[in-house]
Structures are given as structure tokens and as C-alpha cells.
Image 1 (cartoon, rainbow, N blue to C red):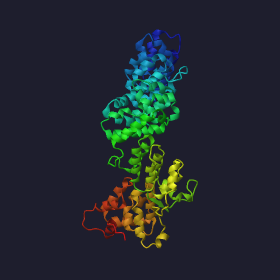
Image 2: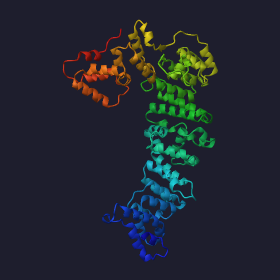
Image 3: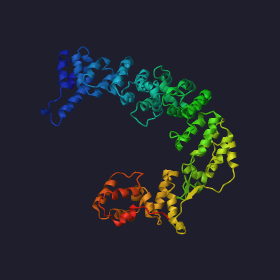
Length: 562
């Protein structure tokens, strides 16, 4: 009845308060059977709102009563159609917080975009992104595009903390790193949300990059993450003030800042090769200064790791132009550990991605992820400022597989490939071959051979060492000392049930405390660092009694290899 009255055009104004009160007042629980009456009231209210709201304009009290009785979705729907306007905001916020869909619905009307943008200060970073995500649900057919001022207002609020970091020397390094990492890996961070918004609105990149307040942050984001084909020449030229990360020139931590600056400009030069044409001298000068100020070509605790040295050399090869620095970087590569290749690992029969030719040294080098030094040689040789004599000298010190890889790589300069081919052949292959048990039967020292395989742990890739451990575990020539060096995960999950059962029995014996310690140790997932020997020692040491099981002592103490 109340719904029918609300929809009648001849409803007297005197009856309007009664109709609104009847529709807005919840049905008492004592008079409602299974909530049916309340559901019917809510349905009647939802149907009546489009008819009642326009008639309450002269009576704010009745209008507030209807808004308070409406759900958040109903308010958003009325805001999208213009029934609820920015003038009703005080009534809405009296009982509710600002939420993204409300701002989106209000901004669907051009005259309300600026007032709606002022409400963004009430939202967090994730809600700011949701303002734009809700647009497809609430926009009007006559206004299908997201208003540019709304996007700019959201970007302004997201870039504010980044802009503050970049303009302060003490925090500039952290700000540049945050901008570089804004690729969506951490969905809740401002920089990740900012890039997702920018990525979805490329038509607004020119205006955002030219903004005097937050344009520098946008320029950094575009240079770091935008594909180069999406930046035309005019927009790329507009981003040049951020290309060399000038904020890091006065950063207090000069070594870390110099390393980060070289890394960033090299990444941007690879991402946008046109930068090497637009500002070659500037890039070369910044690269040279970064290497000098940060002492990046010295083997120190800061840059002494193999991955760190390789990254520095590759970055310098991309944007460097100082022949002396490039020669020193080439020499630095020769000090890195030589690769150690492993062949004969068990594998499936050859498929489309594996052929018998993959055991050739240069292919084995790449399959086992030990070609990084050879790749750095190729890249630094491709720099026209690198002295060829430095590269030729370095080639003579490389592993034969690296020389073959360089000679056959398609990106190797012709003069470098010829220099590699001219080197004399050597018999030193530096390859560890995994033997089968049948081959080990004829070997004079099979246990020593197994130990030599385990000793390459620090020289090979993780998956290669996993295959070695699996081979040792299945070998009938294995000894207790070998099992102790394998990871507990390998022994307990890949060992045969009879083997693991015997090992557990020999460790725990008839001691209840050791069985309890074993159960506690296995309740959490086994990591890749804990060896089986460490696990057994941990179980043994839980028993404080002086008496020790004889079988346990044999497993807990490593045997010397012959």
C-alpha cells in the first residue's frame, strides 16, 4: 500500500511525511515472521525512492530521512542519476564515511567533478584506485569518459609522498627505488597503484607529465615502466628532465646513490634506446661520474658479489663511454669464478625443448645459467668505446665453453667473434660428469667420486645441485657421510620408504623424546638449507641422558671419505 501511494502523482504533500515514515521505519521483529516483512519494506523503499526523492527538495528533514534509510548502493545509484547531489553530502556523511563509489557517482556530473575531487582526501591509496575502478558501474551514458580532473586529482594525492621524497636529498634514494619498484608487485603501495592508474589512462600522460607539482614523479614512472612504443618523441622529450635521476646527485649515501643512479639510467637506456640519441653526452657523463664517485669498479663488500659485479659491468656497457673505465670493467670480469658445468644428470628423453646437442659445452653453459660472464663480455665488447685489446686479453682467460658461447652468440661483434675463434684449443673442459652406478662399479674410489659431486654446491645452479643430490640419494655407493650432507627435504621426501624408515629408526631408536623431537621438526615445512645431518644432530641433542644409541652414533658422526 505505501509503495503504491508513493508512486501516485496525486499524493498530497500532507501525506508525504507519513508515507516516508512508513517506508523508512524498520518492521518490529515481534511482528515479523522470518524477516519477510522487513524484506518487503526494503523492496518497497527501493522502488519508491525515485518517486519520493524529487518531492522532498523543499523539505530537508524528509529528504534526510529518506537518505538515512537508503543503503549505500541506493545512494550511489541516486547520485549517478542526479537525484542525490553534492548538496546532500552533509546528510550522507552524518552516518557514513566517504566511500569510493560515492565519489565516482558524484563526479559523473561535470558540475560536481571539482567538489567530488575534494573528497579524495578522505580515502586511502587503495580506495583512490577504486574510485576509477567503479566508473564503469555508475557513469552516465551521456558522459562515458572518466573526467580528466578527477584522474589528475587522484594522481596528485598518490604522488605527493613520492614527490616529497624526491625533493629531499636524505630521502631521494628511497624515492627513486620506490618509483623503480612500482610495477604491481606490492598492490597496496602508492607507487604500484599510481602506475596502474597511469597505465590505464595513457591519453593523459602528456598533461600529467607537464604538471608543475607532480610531473617529475610521472616522468620517472613513464621512463621506468612504460613500453617505449607508447611514448612518442614529444612525450619522451618531455621526460628528459628525469632521465638521469638528478635527485641522486646530492644524496648523502654517495656509494649507494651512485650505484642506483647508474642502474636506473642504464635500465632507461635499454627501455628507451632513443635516449642514447637524444642525450648521449649527458648519459655518458653521468655514468662516468657515478662510477668515479661510487668507486663501483673496486672489489669491496658493497660490490664484490658476482651478481653485483655483473650488473655494474652490464650497466656501464650500456651507458658508459670512458675507455679506461670500460677496460677496467672488462678486467674485473676475469676475476670472477670460472663456471663449473655438470653433465650426465638423469633426465627425460629428448623433447622439442631438449635435444642431445644440449650437452655441448656452450649450450650446457646457458642451460645451467653460467653464461652470465660471457654475456657481459659480449655486451661490453659491443660498446664502441671499449678498447678491443682489453676484450682480447679477457677472452684468453675464459672457460672454453664461454669462448664457444661468445663465438656463436648472434649479438657478438664480428671482431670479437673472430678473436674468440682465433684462440688456441684447450683440453681443459671444466666439466663434472655424473656417472651411473654401473660406471661407478668399475671406479677405484666411488665414494670419493660421490663426494666430489657434492662439493660443487656453491659453483652450480640450485636445480643442478638438486639433481646431483637426487642421484647421490639413489646411488647404492652412497655412505652415511653423503646422506648427512644432503638436505633433510631430499632425504625424507625423495628417499625410498625403506631407506627413510631405517634412517629414522637408527636415529630415534627406543627413545620417546627423540621420536617427539622428530615429529616436532617435521610439523613445519622443510627448508632448502637444513641438512639431514643437522636434523639428526638436533634430534640426538634433545636427549640429555649420557647413554647413546649405538646406531644413532654411527649416523650422527660423519665418516671420513676415503
